[in-house]
Structure formats: structure tokens, C-alpha cells
Image 1 (tube, rainbow, N blue to C red):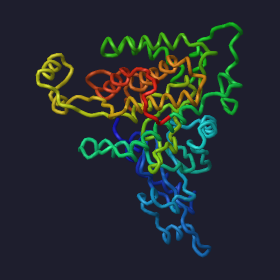
Image 2: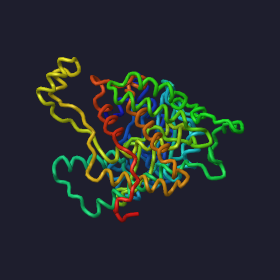
Image 3: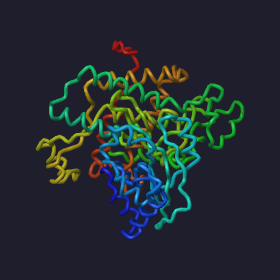
Image 4: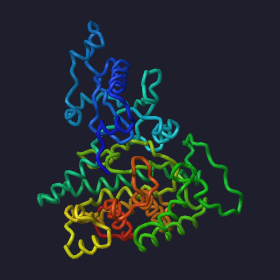
Length: 427
């Protein structure tokens, strides 16, 4: 998926330049004591602004304050603690991508302190159906940026695995486990956290082995079985189709009383995960627009993005010619190469550290590791098995258009569950 820019949002929303300028002026007027800047990180379905308090003087108007106290460079906010004090984030969204504030409030409690507190900014004149949300500024650097720097040095053969980097990676995967363990319900409530504001499902009748999927009623959850069935029929090779079918068979066997349905982020990609660059730990989790109640463990697909990356490799002439004859790859694609998802050295060990830490944090999963792994495979299949076509996520990926997603599918589904002691000495 291409990186999002601010212009991507305005183009997708079909917002005119006049409406865009009007929206920005409305935000500046509402937040007169703040310097309003375009945020460095933008999403495809939102436009994000960073608001920094200006130094105040009782002798100056709000407009004069902004002129007298210019905005600090965006690069400064990562290094200057003073410039981060009191910062806010304001995000504009269109009607099709509004936030569920009840879910956001629940996420803020369950995933504290990683998730931001969000509120609707009302009584503000915005055109084009735009809605504004205010949230506290969660500190940290996007994991996507950290991983990009790491992989660039690997490709340039400048990477030396120092003890410091090794420790940061261990901290990262263990804190990732802490993040994913947070929504597991307390033992007093085997299926749901008591602090959730989401309307609880009625308990299943006694002795009835109710399908766990019956509790998944959200946009994604309600379509788990149909989507897996579609993948089992339409994925481009028999091995992938068989994996989709076997995952569906496993998931359907899981009963309500056996496995919880929990509030899940829904878009656990590196750009939505913030980390502390000094320690390597996860420090924040943003963009909760896709959050809903899903089977615990579906978010495990996210750790794979930490352990590997995509790369393009040249296609051997004989192979390229064969694929071209089969109509799979045209000349342009041959020149670029084919996509492969490559794991970093030590990925298996880091994954084992992650899994063992997760099992320590959620001991109720011990003895049910195969169920946990089935939910992980479910997440991999649903996230990478369908193409993101401008917001529509219903087309099964194919060899011609979706090489990146297929590369991830094949690499991630080959990985098997392994929680054996690897002798790392870090537990």
C-alpha cells in the first residue's frame, strides 16, 4: 500500500481547495492558543493536525500570539520535551470513516496508556461532511520509520547487530506481547472485560456449545466465515486455498466458553504503532477507526511485520518467460522483479520470545496454543488475503495485481508455532 499524504485525503474526499482552506481556518479559530501544523504522519482516510501551545501574553490577541510565537519545526518535537507539553492532535474524517467514541473510550481504558483519549470537536463549521476529533498526543516514533531505517542499513550492508540493538529488539517484542495481552478478560469474566462500555452479549444457554463466531458482530467479525470461505475458493494457489479452509475449520470448532472475543485494534501495521527510540518499547497505538470485538489473538499478525520486510528480487529469464506466456507477468513487471517477504536474522528466536511472554501474561492460553495460532492465521489471512481497493476490501488478492500481499501471505503462513526454550537466557 502506498504511503499516504495530506493531498491523498483531500482528493479521496473530493474536497475543494476552498473547503480545505475553510476547514483549516475553522480549526485555527477554534484553537486560538495553539500553533496548528500538518502532522508528519497521515492516513488514507483522515487528515491529521498537530497543535502546539504558543507562549502566551495578556497583551496580545490570539492572532498576534501565533505571529509572535512561530511553530517549532516538526523535527524538533521528537527531541524537545518542552515543545511536546500540552500538544494535541486534531483529526478530520469524512462520513464514511467516523470514529466510534464508545469503542475509543473502551480502548483508552483497556489499552492504557497506549491508546489516546478521543473526543468529538463539536460546534465547528466544517463543509463536505467532515467531522473533527481531538486527542492527546501519544509520544513515540512510528515503528514504520524505525524499521525502515533498520532495513535500509541492512540492504546497504552497514548493519552491525550491536548488543544495544539486540536489547532493543528484545524489549520491542516483549512489549508487543504486553500490548496484545491487555484485552484478555479478567478471570471473573471469561468472555468480556467488566470495564468495557460495549453492550454485553447474553450468555449462551447451559450445555450449548455455541460457536465463538456468533459473538463477532462487527464489520469484520460478522464476515469471518464468509471471507475465509471466499479465500478458500479464490486464492491463487491450492496451498493457500487449503490453508484458508483449514483455518476456517479450526475457527468454527472454537466454542464461546473456550475463547474470548475482545476489543481488537483492527489495523495493526507499523505506522500505527509508536515506540520509544531509546528503549525500543511500544509506547503508543493510534488510529482506532477499525477497532471492533474479534477473537483474541487475531492481532498476532502484527509481530510478523516487525520481524521481516518486503523486497523485490530479479526474475530469472526462464521463469519470467514462462510466467509471461501464462499471462501472469508482463514485461514491466519482469523489469521490476517479484516481491518476497524476507525475515531478518534471528526472527524465529524473537518470535519465540514474543510468544512465550504472551503465554506468561495470559496463562489461560497455555494448553490452547493451537487455538491461539489459528487466530493468528485468521488475522494473517483476513489482512493480507484481500486487496485494499480505495477502501473496498472484498477482492481476493491475485498474482497480477497483488504481489506484495501474496508475498506476505506465503511467508507468514509458512511459520509454525514454536514456543520451545531456545536457550536465549532472556526470559
